[in-house]
Image 1 (spheres, chains in turn brown, blue):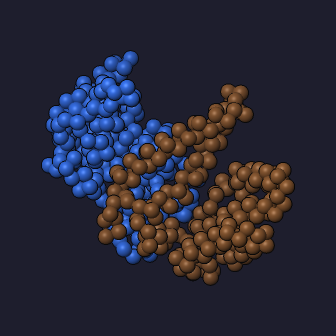
Image 2: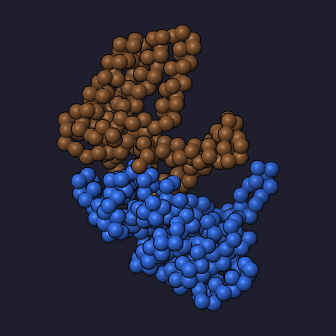
Image 3: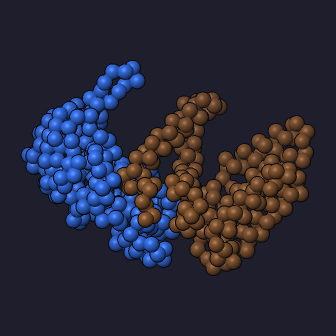
Length: 198
Length: 230
């Protein structure tokens, strides 16, 4: 089974599961934004600790929320090296730490909240199309990652493994094609129309 | 059920400004229970299908579904016409099968628990109980196609349009989907390269260069089509 970026809803009856989705969404937003504004290693580590405590108390098996997909690990390592090269020791903690905290907080939300609950909560305060767009984003990230893997293999097979254009351009084309077909499918299913929730 | 094409022409602009004809003056009355549309790639099959639920509109002529002009009332028509795409991954919106089928039911069932129960029951009818809460990305191609079919059937369409539904499937899943289609009471319009699937239909239309070049019973049309493509 693949490592999902945000995970898949895991039913349960923990306090985190029972917390209203709207409260969870607000908490994720606040706890992700505060470390971005304050930019202190201690605040970042605090945010990360809260995210991990929330996930532990959700009683979702650790194997479902702890592993990171390789592109995420790659980006975090690149960020740490980049900040290290520039001698910004505090940012070596703050930048990847904030990304990790936001990721684990998002996982806590997605793992403990079913898709329909999330959609209902967002539809109360946002236009329904925006709520649907968030649902689509959650389902599209693994598809784009799959495409990245396929394109990387194809580039390697042609001896272009290190060529950034051969690795990136087909992924962009794929993402645009996926968006077009998904748009057609939404129209065909009558989703995103103003009366969907009437 | 009846679908009527009245002198339908569909044109598209090329990037250089010239016009490309996707369908040329198509006239047909589709009343049979199961109709297959066959033809080479780029012949106009998908265009023909997309006209039925308003995903495309004619440049000239009209398409009527049960007497309703699709161009003037596309949303009304879409409630009676379900559409199945070649790649179900593009069609599934939610992360799990039970949530995706539940999304189709939002308009008719307001209570979340009832919606989930109904979605689970519909998936069970298709033999998909074991994947209810799995990620759609972890399903096989056949399972994904059955989930997208279940999502379409959840809104009780009277017509199902399927655009090359077996293209991405292995033989076992093709056979499974064929059997599933055969059991559905809805009128079905299926574009396909799968001539075994086409052979199960009462009527076959052959589309080539944007025109219907052959039309009739599967037993008579398909042998001619094989010869044409030889």
